[in-house]
Length: 184
Image (cartoon, rainbow, N blue to C red; front, side):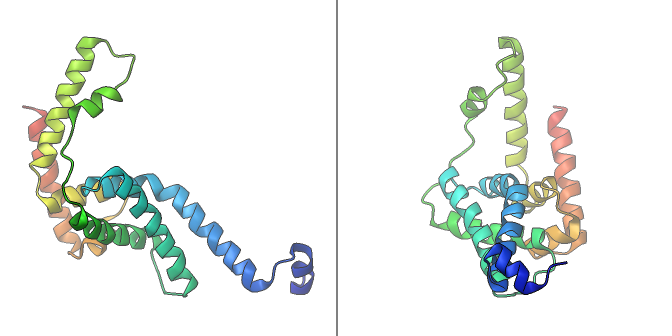
C-alpha cells in the first residue's frame, strides 16, 4: 500500500479531492444503473419527456450534494426513487397539461419485423393494457411502477409514505385488475 504522501504525489490529487472524485464516480455509477428506471418512473407520474429528463438529472445532482454534505443515506436506491417521486409530483403541478397516452407512439416504435396483422393485434393489446393501467388507482400505479423498477415492498413503502402491507395490498389489487383486463 502506498503512503498518502506518495499517493498524492503520484496522482497530483489531495485527499479531499480524491474523496470528491470517488464520490463523483459512485454517483455516476448509480446514475448509469438507475437512470432509465428513474426516467420511466417520472414519465409514469405524468411528466412530459423534457421535464422528466431534467428531473432525472436533478435527482442525481441532489444525491451528490447530499452525500457531499455527509447526510446519512442508508439505502441510496430508495432515496433516489423517493426524491424522484417528490420532485416529479412538484414538477407535474407546474405543468399546464398532462399528455394523455398516444397509441400512435406505440405504432412508430413498433417492431418492424411484425406483419400488418401482428402489428394491429399488438396495438390492440397495448391499448387494452393502457386502458387497464388508467383504471388503476394512483397508488396502485405508483406501487406497480416502483415494483417494476426493482424496489422491494419496504422501499416502496418508504418512497410513498405508506406501510409495506399497504404496498402489498395495492399491488395485489392492481395485478388482479390487469389480469382481468388481459382476459377480456
